[in-house]
Image 1 (cartoon, one colour):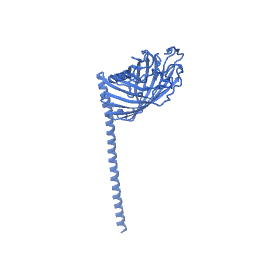
Image 2: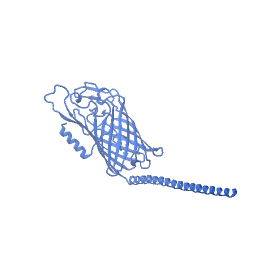
Image 3: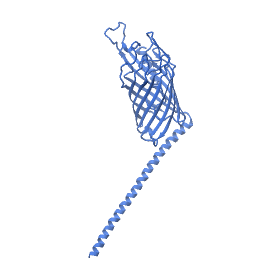
Amino acid sequence: MRAYLKFMVVIILLASNLAYAQLENAYRTLLHTQTGRNLQDGKLVINADMNFYTKAGKFIGSVKPIDFTEVSYWLVAGNIVASYGFMEHLDASLGLRLYQDTHRQNVYNFPDDIFLTLRAGSFYTSRNHLVHSFMLSSRIPTAKQHNNHFVEFASGAVEYGAMYAVSILSDAYLPDRSFQAHFNIGYWNHNESGITYKFENGKEFTAQKNSSELRLAIAGVFPTRLIDYRLELSGMLYLNRPEDFIYSAEEWVFFTPSLRYKLSSAIAFDLGVDFRLSPGDREWTRPDIPKPSASVSLPTNYPEWRVQMGAVFAFNVTEKAVSSTESYEKAKAQEKINEFEMILEEREKAKEVQKEIENLKKLRKEAEEEIKELKKILED
């Protein structure tokens, strides 16, 4: 797609907020990391996010074709996800990747694939300082083109996986106002065995095995009244590497600093940047597979950076959700008040005890003075 058309696509996506930049997922309070807490019963959350990368495509080599024109290449992905809390410990998410650049014959997918996630969470341990959740996810192929450049491997089959998330809360009573740490570990199977992949140079290859991944993420959140400051480290290791005709055959690690601006309790906006820490070399894909980076200065596997942005909208669909939220917050606030009152009461008791000790010291001193006086009288 030409540069000005790609620019218009980005503007449209930004204006409409109909974008999503994450892999198979559920509702997230961070860009790439799941938390141990799930949505409350009756709560609906709409995530609208996107990411993009752009670079001027300069010719590589000494003999430039006469008809070569330098253009800006864009890599844009966008999706929208709806998540709903069905009961105290269960929520579900339905996501659609609306747009995905492919840089293949079809240029882009519109729409791309569908994502489903079921999560059981908000299991508290260690006096409510640890929160656990478990997720089952699936990617359902609805896009026209799979196995694309510069992005995570999409096999074109029904993919599936599982993930465990744990959150560490420094304040169990007011977790959203104090430091939090989160850790994820998950398994993903691309299920591509038997899928045939066709390329622009006429070559065709059929996958003979399934590839699978170990996915990891760790994050820290430093919240304030209006802005949450977040740091994330996310990555993927292949447990079973895909065959050599797959473009995204390399493992990856990204570091992501981001901000969340909390306009209200129901609306928030995210902004962050992914920085690739893993090597940028293309090591595992065979050389006879067409790739734009062979003649143009583009990434050989994944982009060195990506801008992440989006919006979150929360709704209390049922009266139960409203009362549940209010009662939960009131209960937590009351627990905090009770804790403070207990501390103050203990301090008052300590003060009284200290006062009694001082009185006893004073009485002892007076008694010692009287004893001295009596001894003096006896000596006289």
